[in-house]
Length: 383
Image (cartoon, rainbow, N blue to C red; front, side, top):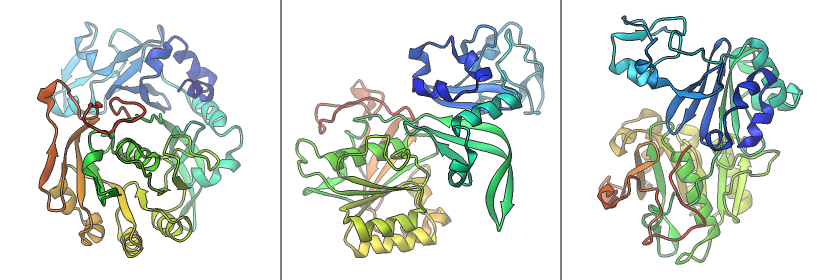
C-alpha cells in the first residue's frame, strides 16, 4: 500500500506526507480530479484532505462544521466539501454553498498534478501501457488498478489514445485472507466444487470474496486436502492483479491466470490448455459469455462467477444475464446485502440454505469462526 505514494505526482504527494501509515493503509480508493477535492474512500466513507494540515476529514461531518453555510436547493452541483452522495438524496433540500466554506480548504490537484501523476504511473512511457489504457486503466505493481477519465481519441470505433486525462481513480488491491471461510462449507460437496454465483451491488466486496474462494480451493485446507486446479479469467486485472503477467494477489498454488483477455475467449483458452477443475470469472453476462459457459459445462468443469444485483430474483430478472442464467446451472448463490457482509447462501431454486446470524456476537459473516475451515488469515472484506 505504501508503494502507491511513489506513483503520486509531487504536488499530490505533499498532501499525503502527514497521513500516517496506519491511516494510509486503510484507504481503499484515491480519487483525483482536476480542480476538484481529492476524495479518499476509507472504511466505506469519503474523506477530504485539509490542504493546510494534510489530514483526512469525514465528508459527512461537514454538516456539523460551524462555518458551513446551508441553504435550501435542489441543485446537486455544489463544490465539496460536501455531504455523502447518498446523504444528498436523503436530504433533498440541502446543499453546501460553493466556496468550500466549511472550516478548511480541501486539497485539490491541478491539471499539472494529474499529468505528473500519470507520468509516474506509466513510468514515463504511455506507449508501453497503450493496450491497458485503451481499456481505461493501468495495473500497478501490487495489483493496484488505476482507472482514468477524460477525452479519448477514437479510431475504428475503439479507443486509440487519450488526448486529455482529467480524472484518476486508484483502487487499492487488498486480499482479505479468510474472508470466504463462512461460505466455503456451502459451496463444496463430496470433495468437489458446486457451480456458484456471487451476487451484490458494486463495491460490496464480491470480487474480494471470489478471490479468497479461489485461493482456498486452489491451496486446499484441512478437511479439503485435495486442492483443485483453477483457471482464472481476469479480464480487467482485478482478481489476481497481474503485473507483467505475474499475479500480485494470492490466488492459490494451483491457479492459472489469463490476464487482460476478454472473458469468453479466456475461458475457452483455459479449457483447451490448462485442464482446470474450476473456472473463475468476474461479472459474467452477455451472449458471448453464455457460449463460453456452454463450453465449460460440456467439458465437465465447474464455474465460479460474480454478477451485479441485489438478490437472486433481481439477477434472474436482469436481461443481460438471461443468456447465462437460462442454462440453470448454478447450484449456489452467495448474496452480499451490504459492504463486506454476506446475507446468505441459496440453492438453485433461490431457497436459503444458510443465513447470517449477527446475534452471535459477530456483525459480519466474514469473520472467521472455529466451525469453518481454517485458512491462513481472517477478517472483514474492505475492498
